[in-house]
Image (tube, rainbow, N blue to C red; front, side, top):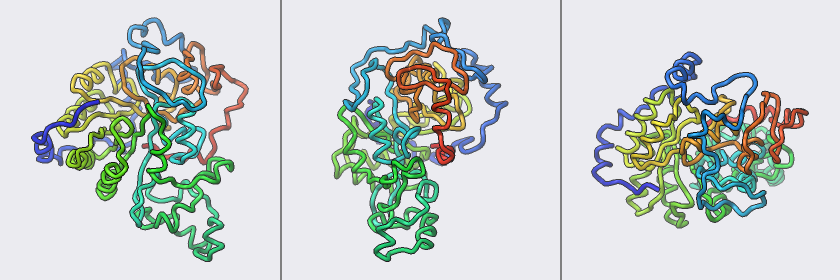
Length: 401
């Protein structure tokens, strides 16, 4: 893990923070840009395919760099899972095991570790009464049950109409103790998760197994939450092997790192970016170093994260991760996760769909997999449609990042 960098670098970074603007962030991706980038980097466009996905042990021509199952001594969770191969790259559950369980809940985090993930990623917000808890959006509307919780109705605290209006209020204006902790954020996924509530960060961190870690995303521009979470880290004594911070806002990530260093806390801060080209990736690698950050985390596309990008990040002492996006269906596949392990990436953030979980347990992609086929936990391709409707309409509205 990279060590914190010198005070001189902090000063140099702050003098030109306006140059840290993120070109292209939040703009829709262009098919033309993808095609041109893939043509410019044909050796890294392994998984930019459509139609049937043809895999032959990841192809002999790629064997030199797709080295699956390189040995390491990284510990994994001892939760119920079949023993698989030890791996050089950690797999991180995106908002937990969000393919199967409701995002950013204790159930989702627990399931990710049971599936064999070495880490979990989650998003934090700060409530009106100062609690740090898990939620992706700025409101509860997308993930909250439509019905007012019984305990709030019985006590006369809220009517159904009042409850619904509160779901659209900015989360920073709502009390955790008085409201947020009562809201069902699980039943949108499945009725079995109706008992899930937005958990406190302290409760989530308490269930991270020894040898595993959490990636905590701090939302852009939220200095109040960044300041509060640094105090929480100091209070709880969380260490660098257990917790890392990520975020898209370079200015905020730089300030977060400064606050951590000021408190003597050796917690990694990693810059997230959604990029179009290797040159952009190289730019943000340089910016991360200049700003004293500890790593970069790019979208899981091999035409952006090339062998040269990986080499530059490693040469500069940075951690390197990649993350998936539901708008890029080929990003969260066994083929893609294996490709990035072969490139030498440190961690891969996945929703943990069945085929990725099977890959984690030792399955090697070696079949022709049609878009309608799915892979069960034993690594067998299922074309019966058993998984076909697993992704509910509610799941399809999950927002990336």
